[in-house]
Image (cartoon, one colour):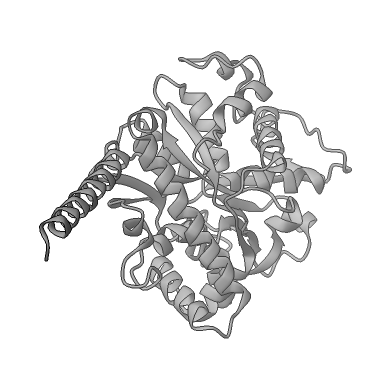
Length: 371
């Protein structure tokens, strides 16, 4: 090789090395605010939060989880309810990002105040997916009068759904201090109690004379499908019947975490969207190997059998989009929770909150920056 060709080859090698270094530096810069760990909260056994399990599964990702493909190392932390995630997970700085019901995400942020729970909604997770299950003594809504009915807690979206269902059928809760305000003719009241979702089926099986017996409950899936499969109760109404296309769960982020690690939050949402697209594609082709994998992962995540899992999946609509309709329904949720006394109206300006009205709150609480 002539000297001239050697010089040209050397120059080309230097250019290639420089280009590689530049690309490496760009990649490092893009990773600069991605932390070594992201603490992720979710409700244990709640099939609404299945997108987390999908994004964290190596088989779905082709040997590497979707999270890892996006450069994220996630550490999961399960909770009993969305209210607990907000009160403990975020207020006690146990999580950075979490899958939470829209109702507790809104009510706990407002009721506890930004000084304690400084969070934002950054994506949708699912629509619908809850069931009202009743025992054999209940054939129609009015049969609930005088009976004991349970929901996970008063901060849950299921409680809000129950109140709306009762109001539309001429009923209210016996210990509700507010007078009945529904448009349907008043038929009576029900006795309400909180109940952990894991106990609902057992409480319904107790003798009617037992003070802990409940005649009906509303819960997220797969709790309802599990009770039906066990022969404990039947579906009185789905949340689709009560409030069609209603948002249910959302992704909530700590605002301080997002300020420090915006790239990590953006990558998390990218992984979340990929997981939901995979779920919806698998659900559309129930003869595919991906659907079989979906059911397998969901069974493991919920600890339920094939029948229950498939029934539960059929009741849930997974969606990440932040649309005008989504925002409008969260505004309606907030107004309903104020009407029902779940959120006192003065909480808009409580403990660091500085919202002029509900619309101002919704506009600022939902952030689309990471979509």
